[in-house]
Image 1: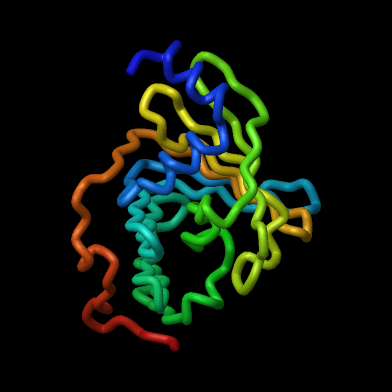
Image 2: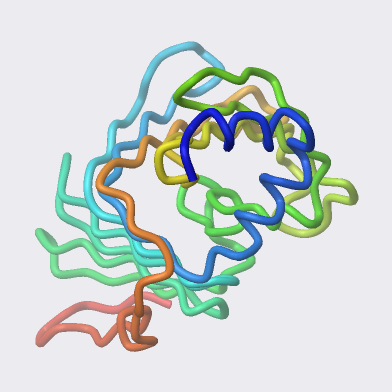
Length: 197
């Protein structure tokens, strides 16, 4: 589909178009970098690496900078592994911090209000807000999602919580609906790894 036609379709029905496309997203993988800014206004962390997502709740973050770490969620539990220290932390998914939770990065668009903010020849910018926030989503103030019209995939997601903190993800080398095996979202502690749970 060429860009002018796609622009016309989005302009006619932006909410339905974005919901349909994102709801059909079965898997997503990309290179990413994330800027974490707290309500003081200072950027406290910058992460770079690779992200793998499998609908509805499986996530793998391979953080390469500033320090190598691995964050894996199978939808029930979360493993955080720090290679330098050879330490792993096991957590229940409901306690996972927002900057790495799939619930925040890829919010279920059917449970959100979706508004089109800006439409250009290259991107559509949407604001998403939970309709009835519960559990992990209760502190989300809103999400801005930029969708590239070249591949109709998210190229940026900015999450803002009710405390004024923001978590800004940028995605490059995006691939959608490629086969990702479940074992990619399972973690086995390496030899001599110290495990905390």
